[in-house]
Length: 89
Image (cartoon, rainbow, N blue to C red; front, side, top):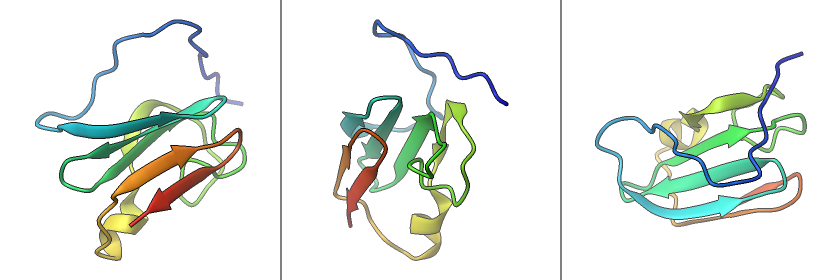
């Protein structure tokens, strides 16, 4: 089982270069950001698939949700719940 650190206080996060974040939302154990270009990046606890990567793998690093890119969808808004992530495209 992968160890995912849970931060109780704000922490710096390295995102891929040249990304400008326009929105952020935090769930109970995961986080999502929307870029100005309409891409979604998620990280944290993924046990219920809430990261949107098509699996139940957790990650300490922000990863782009490739399915949305492959479908040509531009993300407008994201809202994270306790074990869910809602995206408006």
